[in-house]
Length: 157
Image (cartoon, rainbow, N blue to C red; front, side, top):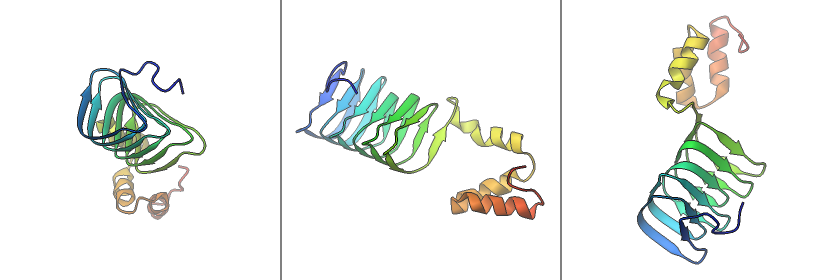
Protein backbone atom coordinates (compact mmCIF):
# COMPACT_ATOMS: atom_id res chain seq x y z
CA UNK A 1 0.00 0.00 0.00
CA UNK A 2 1.25 3.50 -0.79
CA UNK A 3 2.05 6.12 1.83
CA UNK A 4 -0.77 6.90 4.21
CA UNK A 5 -2.54 9.65 2.27
CA UNK A 6 -0.90 9.52 -1.15
CA UNK A 7 -3.57 10.12 -3.78
CA UNK A 8 -6.50 10.21 -1.34
CA UNK A 9 -8.94 13.11 -1.76
CA UNK A 10 -10.23 12.61 1.77
CA UNK A 11 -8.52 11.10 4.84
CA UNK A 12 -10.05 10.10 8.15
CA UNK A 13 -6.91 9.96 10.30
CA UNK A 14 -5.86 7.26 12.74
CA UNK A 15 -6.95 9.25 15.81
CA UNK A 16 -10.22 10.44 14.25
CA UNK A 17 -13.75 9.17 14.82
CA UNK A 18 -16.54 9.87 12.33
CA UNK A 19 -20.21 8.96 12.76
CA UNK A 20 -22.74 9.91 10.09
CA UNK A 21 -23.23 10.21 6.34
CA UNK A 22 -20.22 10.69 4.13
CA UNK A 23 -20.46 11.09 0.35
CA UNK A 24 -17.27 11.98 -1.50
CA UNK A 25 -16.52 12.60 -5.14
CA UNK A 26 -13.03 11.15 -5.12
CA UNK A 27 -11.00 8.66 -3.12
CA UNK A 28 -11.24 8.04 0.63
CA UNK A 29 -8.69 6.64 3.07
CA UNK A 30 -9.93 5.61 6.50
CA UNK A 31 -7.29 5.05 9.18
CA UNK A 32 -9.52 5.91 12.16
CA UNK A 33 -13.01 4.81 13.21
CA UNK A 34 -15.99 5.31 10.93
CA UNK A 35 -19.61 4.37 11.44
CA UNK A 36 -22.50 5.44 9.26
CA UNK A 37 -23.20 5.72 5.57
CA UNK A 38 -20.39 6.02 3.02
CA UNK A 39 -20.34 6.34 -0.75
CA UNK A 40 -17.75 7.36 -3.31
CA UNK A 41 -17.49 7.27 -7.08
CA UNK A 42 -13.80 6.39 -6.76
CA UNK A 43 -11.65 4.27 -4.45
CA UNK A 44 -12.19 3.61 -0.75
CA UNK A 45 -9.31 2.27 1.35
CA UNK A 46 -9.70 0.98 4.89
CA UNK A 47 -6.13 1.26 6.17
CA UNK A 48 -4.51 -1.16 8.65
CA UNK A 49 -5.67 0.91 11.65
CA UNK A 50 -9.12 1.60 10.18
CA UNK A 51 -12.21 0.30 11.97
CA UNK A 52 -15.30 0.74 9.82
CA UNK A 53 -18.95 -0.19 10.36
CA UNK A 54 -20.92 0.59 7.21
CA UNK A 55 -22.02 -0.69 3.83
CA UNK A 56 -19.54 0.47 1.19
CA UNK A 57 -20.40 1.44 -2.36
CA UNK A 58 -17.40 2.44 -4.48
CA UNK A 59 -15.60 1.88 -7.76
CA UNK A 60 -12.70 0.08 -6.01
CA UNK A 61 -12.36 -1.04 -2.38
CA UNK A 62 -9.21 -2.07 -0.50
CA UNK A 63 -9.45 -3.42 3.05
CA UNK A 64 -6.38 -3.71 5.29
CA UNK A 65 -8.21 -2.96 8.55
CA UNK A 66 -11.50 -4.11 10.10
CA UNK A 67 -14.85 -3.79 8.33
CA UNK A 68 -18.33 -4.75 9.48
CA UNK A 69 -20.66 -4.24 6.53
CA UNK A 70 -21.27 -5.13 2.91
CA UNK A 71 -19.07 -4.12 -0.01
CA UNK A 72 -20.38 -3.33 -3.49
CA UNK A 73 -17.60 -2.44 -5.92
CA UNK A 74 -18.00 -1.58 -9.59
CA UNK A 75 -14.47 -2.73 -10.54
CA UNK A 76 -12.51 -4.53 -7.82
CA UNK A 77 -12.15 -5.47 -4.16
CA UNK A 78 -8.70 -6.10 -2.68
CA UNK A 79 -8.43 -7.76 0.74
CA UNK A 80 -4.97 -7.34 2.21
CA UNK A 81 -3.45 -9.81 4.69
CA UNK A 82 -4.33 -7.68 7.73
CA UNK A 83 -7.96 -7.31 6.65
CA UNK A 84 -10.91 -8.57 8.70
CA UNK A 85 -14.34 -8.41 7.05
CA UNK A 86 -17.76 -9.42 8.34
CA UNK A 87 -20.20 -8.90 5.49
CA UNK A 88 -21.09 -9.69 1.91
CA UNK A 89 -18.93 -8.77 -1.08
CA UNK A 90 -20.26 -8.09 -4.59
CA UNK A 91 -17.65 -7.27 -7.25
CA UNK A 92 -16.49 -8.25 -10.73
CA UNK A 93 -12.91 -8.88 -9.47
CA UNK A 94 -11.65 -10.05 -6.07
CA UNK A 95 -8.05 -10.29 -4.84
CA UNK A 96 -7.43 -11.94 -1.46
CA UNK A 97 -4.03 -12.11 0.24
CA UNK A 98 -3.14 -14.97 2.58
CA UNK A 99 -4.04 -14.06 6.16
CA UNK A 100 -7.37 -12.33 5.48
CA UNK A 101 -10.21 -13.17 7.86
CA UNK A 102 -13.70 -12.90 6.39
CA UNK A 103 -17.22 -14.21 6.80
CA UNK A 104 -20.05 -13.52 4.39
CA UNK A 105 -21.33 -14.21 0.92
CA UNK A 106 -19.06 -13.42 -2.02
CA UNK A 107 -20.59 -12.75 -5.43
CA UNK A 108 -18.19 -12.28 -8.33
CA UNK A 109 -19.89 -11.15 -11.51
CA UNK A 110 -19.23 -9.48 -14.80
CA UNK A 111 -21.08 -6.47 -13.44
CA UNK A 112 -24.60 -7.95 -13.71
CA UNK A 113 -25.30 -9.92 -10.51
CA UNK A 114 -29.01 -10.26 -11.35
CA UNK A 115 -28.27 -12.97 -13.90
CA UNK A 116 -25.74 -15.17 -12.04
CA UNK A 117 -28.26 -17.86 -11.07
CA UNK A 118 -29.77 -17.87 -14.59
CA UNK A 119 -26.36 -18.32 -16.25
CA UNK A 120 -25.39 -21.16 -13.95
CA UNK A 121 -28.81 -22.77 -14.31
CA UNK A 122 -28.49 -22.67 -18.12
CA UNK A 123 -25.05 -24.31 -17.95
CA UNK A 124 -26.07 -26.87 -15.34
CA UNK A 125 -29.41 -27.93 -16.75
CA UNK A 126 -32.29 -29.74 -15.06
CA UNK A 127 -32.26 -29.93 -11.28
CA UNK A 128 -30.38 -26.67 -10.81
CA UNK A 129 -33.35 -24.89 -9.27
CA UNK A 130 -33.70 -27.60 -6.60
CA UNK A 131 -29.97 -27.40 -5.84
CA UNK A 132 -30.08 -23.58 -5.54
CA UNK A 133 -33.01 -23.91 -3.17
CA UNK A 134 -31.25 -26.44 -0.94
CA UNK A 135 -28.03 -24.39 -0.95
CA UNK A 136 -29.82 -21.22 0.12
CA UNK A 137 -31.49 -23.09 3.00
CA UNK A 138 -28.34 -24.75 4.32
CA UNK A 139 -25.52 -22.71 2.84
CA UNK A 140 -23.51 -25.90 2.41
CA UNK A 141 -22.20 -27.48 -0.77
CA UNK A 142 -22.68 -30.98 0.63
CA UNK A 143 -26.44 -30.54 0.54
CA UNK A 144 -26.26 -29.76 -3.19
CA UNK A 145 -24.14 -32.88 -3.77
CA UNK A 146 -26.76 -35.00 -1.97
CA UNK A 147 -29.45 -33.57 -4.24
CA UNK A 148 -27.37 -34.43 -7.30
CA UNK A 149 -26.85 -38.01 -6.10
CA UNK A 150 -30.60 -38.50 -5.65
CA UNK A 151 -31.05 -37.42 -9.28
CA UNK A 152 -28.57 -40.14 -10.32
CA UNK A 153 -25.67 -37.80 -11.11
CA UNK A 154 -22.30 -37.41 -9.48
CA UNK A 155 -21.21 -33.88 -8.36
CA UNK A 156 -18.65 -33.79 -11.16
CA UNK A 157 -21.31 -34.16 -13.91
